Image (cartoon, rainbow, N blue to C red; front, side):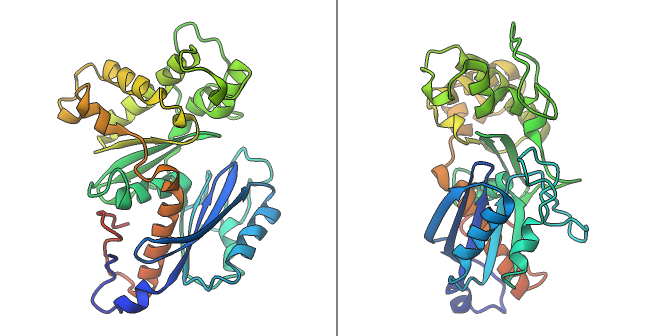
Length: 325
């Protein structure tokens, strides 16, 4: 159930149709749902050039009579209200998208409230409300696929800060003997440059899903992911770490990451959740919402935007989790 404050009509809120967009670097997923979190419809299509891709999204919502739209977008994006480029995609390596007024294109067509955040923050939000972190006040969500992104939900709020977290571009220590230059156009051997799907293919000559479970690629992959997770645990002390994205769909990878995180922390953080075995297995986990984390999170962003538009300044939880922001 969604809490909107004492002045709102539950019937009016629950009957509203909410739009949701999970805008990834490879594909867009658009959908509609209800204010209590039920997804009613969805469509997906490749992420092409901005005019074409945003046009397809606009066409999808044209006859849906949405009351609000939540958007979780690949980035970097401008999340600063009042900024002249608020709602823009900024310095992305995605060809054609740098400087794109993403939110403005939707606003010019649909005069409704908007929720706007990164795709990984949206996924973290979805997991905090309905997924693996439901009922917790913090979690980290990693997407490891075409790129690497990290969403941070901390003490009941999505973290933005100066811009928003860009943990996929931290600089890890190299695996012993690893001479791969990395594929990131900005940093070369950052986490994304070394561990993303394109990095796997560039390093080994085939997509990751074609590599067998005993291939040395996975030991190297786990090394880089576990370094980031270990550092994030020490920096942010989240209640849950969720690893999603296409690369993490290789089921043999998650146990390797857990093993390396335990090795990195070396018993320093005294918490039962970090104990090898059942504790760590429940702490570093796959998404509870499967491949729907991003779209469901975008739906939560839309629900929140509608709530805030109708009840300005009134805090309230969305769904069954503790999400407040």
